[in-house]
Length: 207
Image (tube, rainbow, N blue to C red):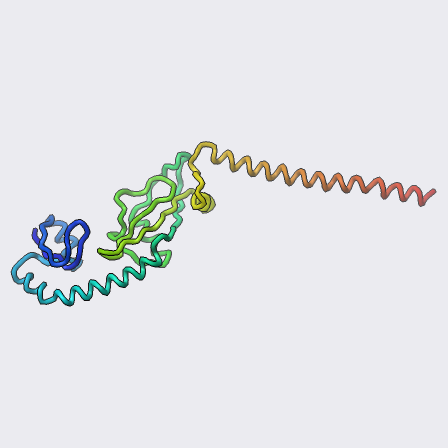
């Protein structure tokens, strides 16, 4: 099917261009979303009559998108999921999940605005593009981890999937416990040393 684009569509064309697309794409997306018209003589005249209005509306939307992009660009969102030792998720993070996560962060986006070719299936820091407008994109970071603590470590640049990562945590905990026990022993030793002195004073008094 040939259509007249009413706005710029990525990888398709600019406003006013007549392009050929799949019938299903036109009927299910372009036409109902008001992004295109069927390429007929009548619609061609209609487009020319509305061109100035369409261009003004597009410019307004672009400015709104740029305002949102300034706030959204570079934002990091934490996603906690179960995963194996190698970092492989027991499931995945989809575009629909990202829409919900971003909305909880105070930003409104649609599923078709999330440029995620494949679901995320591993823990780590994943950069994802959000198309706020045909001419405005924003890049966010999805921090997928097994816990909030692990997400913080990833944000600091730690590789939480490397071999022995969990063992290092145990070592740190053990060292902390040992240090605490040592401090406790030193405190008891100091108290023990002062006890005989007190006893000696009592003996001298009795004598």
